[in-house]
Image (cartoon, rainbow over all chains, first blue to last red; front, side, top):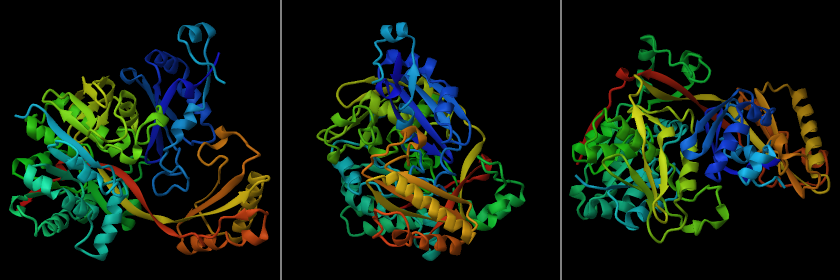
Length: 117
Length: 453
């Protein structure tokens, strides 16, 4: 089943130099396993292809039902150098929540995941 | 020893709500008011101000904030901790003293001034001694931009603030203290946490991280269930009620808007996060994967379980340097085919810029209303009622960037139709002051505390 991250998670993003970070938080604790299993480093790197110049790193925070992603080379130099509207990476959060993941039907049913509209 | 120490946040950055400090001291009982003024580029702005006038170089908003909270400080014993000193903490303290000169009880004012973070005057000596101050992102040595450096400050920890409080200060003004130290220092002072009480120190850092951006943890900028967050016009700034064991509750004053919940706190915890296992500060390395959050009544979140470990032997240094010039101009194209018109205008402008050979490092076009923030993820929409073409150029030469700003207006009559939104005139050329993060040995930085009474 196709599931859109916006329907199962919330997020906040910020910056550190030319790196944007996106923290993605499961809306229900039981959905955290969906994030860890399907929102992989590679999947996020593919999602942002063409928007970032560097690597993606992923960290797990099971205590907060959250993942943290670092998107390197995302901000046109960052801070005051950047010419971007989103020079401080504030809305990479919702850009990540556009992602659609493919979850096996049995898991989707067990976890009562909402289907992507 | 107090059982509970209350620390309220009253500013999340220089430019935050001017009324928030007063609302924090009047809205309910607090012991400390914490005001964070310094972002990465703020020090360089303050350095420029100090060059023009040696009596400036601090966050002047702080003087007004102090006037608004002085009755609480002088009559109720509330203490204030702020990194408003910028590159001139002593002048900041003098300005506060001058502003309080006519107040009853002014004799009770004791301002602790923390200095020693400013490395600008020592920079050549340090580099000659072999401190390369390599850029943490690029690895380049500072020598490559030395002649363009405007300011250089070490991020210092909680110890000098604790020393000032021990010395009887009821207002502490620092320069480039870490944001989190402003919250952790009073907890160390009140609870007597030792310099190696790693778990408690880490808890103080987490408390600081949660409240250092003001209302961003109490309902502001919160994506989770944002429509239902009440009365943001009267948003309550956060406060922590901390205990000696390192646990604390985040809450806000009664009769304020906003919300304090596990989701609002979680969003703030992940804000600007790097490796969550290692949140490195001068005092301690905090492990954010150990934080436990529990809702503890309405607008109350209990935070506990935090562990920490010893810090490194380095301090981070924030260097600001001149890095060329930039300008950003905009034009708005209307339906029908707004995006196509904006794209054609962009191609035309770029062809003209190419002919001029202005030597830019970067020219960036964005189409606001189509893809400025989410890029190709937004998909292509052809029916937008309007699209804003937003063009930026950056380069080493001011005259070239000036020329760029003159190329935008002619598009209005020369190029695609249905264009408007140019009434603001020619874009402004800005000098770029960029940020150079580096590390230095801790032993190099000697802080000093003076108390002005």
